Length: 336
Ligand code: RIB
Image (tube, rainbow, N blue to C red; front, side):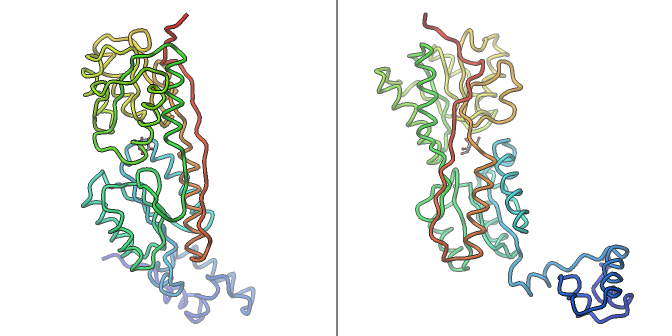
């Protein structure tokens, strides 16, 4: 086993007590001479001493850690979301501990327990495969604050809203405006509440315009690029003029399948997505999609959670973030 530099080693070299080193390194060295303070800091650098996390957590009764559980780390939407969390957490001197549940209940539960074991002060849960009542029970018993977001529906508690229903409606209105009255949808085969709301907004807008979407035109797929790729044949069988992919990853799966079949977007079929991941501007044609403020979602979630960790009596907070339609090149106008 490797020998870590300890506070004892540093104290010995500095010829002071362990308490003196600890106080100086914790910014409480006012009562020591300038020479001693400088010596301790110089030796810390020279010896590469890193204070022991467990000892510090015990003193502070906090690990200054946020446990984060997302469904799929592979998806750029969640990378952007995590960057937002990271930015807010670091600003308030917390460290994010990130877990991907891969849509597995077993993994999600394991990471929940790992976060508690590793002294997380709070959790942000964006994945929703487990029973939320159970999650609430475990975390409340351990007096750990948590915030549910995105795929994990909020029943009670701090909330970051992003209006999925309106997002679905924005896409529908855009397609209708461009003359698409017969469209298909690739939805998630295990839809979470946010995805269901997104789909409902889309279906309701077509319904309201007098162009009800046939149930056979709503195709289920995995919420991945492969899911989109595999759904392409079913989409083409509907002979619709446009398809709404429930997220951008699914849209890019369709892109690849259509390209392989010699189907051109948007001349043969228009495609719209949801999220506005970074790749949306780099594929040809550039994807028309709904922009979700993934970074701000993460940033706000972390801020609200830290507020709650630091004061459990903070009144419940609800922040609404706006979405917008990003019109690019993947929709063809088929009206005069
Ligand atoms: O791309 C990931 C999708 O799952 C996003 O649309 C996000 O809202 C999440 O639910």
